[in-house]
Structures are given as structure tokens and as C-alpha cells.
Image (cartoon, rainbow, N blue to C red; front, side, top):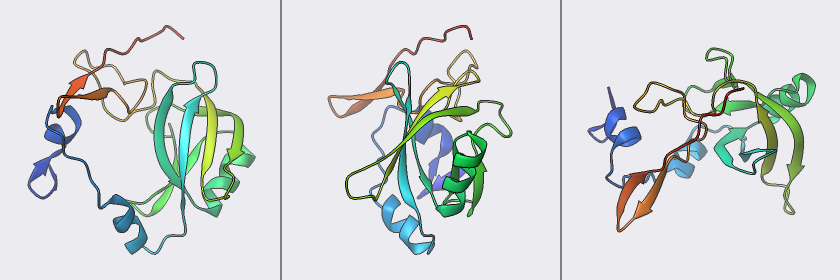
Length: 148
């Protein structure tokens, strides 16, 4: 599957080449969706799991359900994290930044991970931040899979 500009999902998600999407915010703006960024952090470990977007409906759904819910800017629909994968993120606390233009969801993962990708062993990754930049290339960081 080609994601964009001839780049496959495999290259983007598993490759060691740096292919940052500096156009993402512009693409989100072009959808016309009224959203703001949401940083999602493990309430216990402090690990950043994902960054997503929320509109008013996503925030209301998160508050009422206690489960992290976002607005999918690629599918233009409500996205209840874990609805299909089972990797739900239970809300421990919601914080608002000083300018009230981003949110921080402190969560407790109820499944095996938070990322939609899987490691070489086929396990869901705990965090979407599974690579680090070293010398202009990406290097996979070993993630610990704790029994839940």
C-alpha cells in the first residue's frame, strides 16, 4: 500500500530512512475540521504513547466514556481508541495547556499497546515512538512488553 509520494506504509512505519511529514498540520487544516492536538501519556510510567487530534465531540465522548477518543483527520470520523484492536486507553486525567489549544490525556492502557503497528514478533507496540534519530537515520528502540 502506498501512503503518499510513492512511500509505502512499510517504509514509513518500519524503515530507517527519515521521512518526516512536515505537511501534516497543513493537511489537517485543509480538512476544515476544528481540532486540536492531544498528547497521550501513560499516567504511571510517563511514557508518551501517541499524539492525535480531538474535536468537541471527541472530547465530550472521552469525558463521558472515560476512554480516549479522538477525531481521525485521515478518515474524518470519530475514533474510539481500541474499539477494533482492544487496545483501549482508560482516562486517568485530562489536562489543558496554558493557551487552551492542546490537551494532555493521562491514560492507563487496558490492552497490549497504543500503536497501530506491530514489532517483529507481531506484538502491538506500547508507544508510537518506537524509533530514535541517530546520525540522520532511524533506529528502533526496544520496547518492553509487560504482562497486564
